[in-house]
Length: 255
Ligand SMILES: C[S@@+](CC[C@H](N)C(=O)[O-])C[C@H]1O[C@@H](n2cnc3c(N)ncnc32)[C@H](O)[C@@H]1O
Image 1 (spheres, protein in one colour):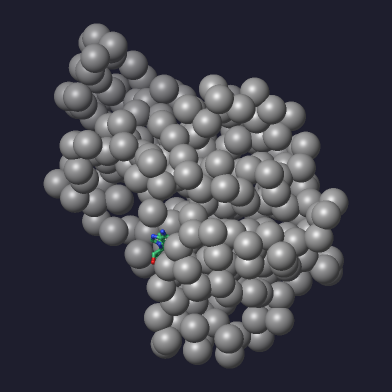
Image 2: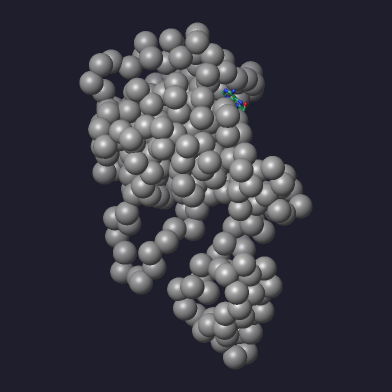
């Protein structure tokens, strides 16, 4: 893609696979093009490795945290199950939303390796009473048995997949956890941004196909009881109809 931003004359020129376009710099389409490039530049600069939530590093794009908060407030799940714990920031984030909503919600975090210093910090956190940690691969039988045993029949579960983001692993996770999701709730295959960043210095060319969005699309084709659908804006006084996100093609809603 070639981009020419002319902020003296307020125009943007874009040449890409869709052809050549001139447009006003301050239009929605220009915002989308510039934002998507900013997402790629930020990903390369490890921008998302600069945040924490209530004391724990959180490896998430802040835009996605606000969007998932919108969904959680609407859905009010009983349980949020997340694969991929790392430093625990996202578990604390979900627990803090439950605390702020004054509901009983619990958070289950699964990781193949919970490093001792991370475990110690998570267990010492004031919100740990809402969190259960399971150490093991997210697709191992024993892990699945432990996770399922923590969830009572009829509970409303939101599943967020943020562990190994390669297509086959995400596809296996989707198959392993989809039965926990009741109608109206979601299973979210995060980090489809891998497809968009395949061609940048820190990217990997195979991510063009080997990514969570591909896994989610294939899963939706095989499971008509799920639809791939991004939650609509809960508030929008703009003319924008797209999100700036690391989670494109992520949201699988059970019909
Ligand atoms: C992107 S980090 C998770 C970030 C975290 N959710 C947050 O927002 O801060 C990915 C994590 O997935 C874990 N992981 C990788 N493969 C896994 C697997 N097969 N099962 C479970 N966890 C895995 C890694 O150990 C790593 O901690």
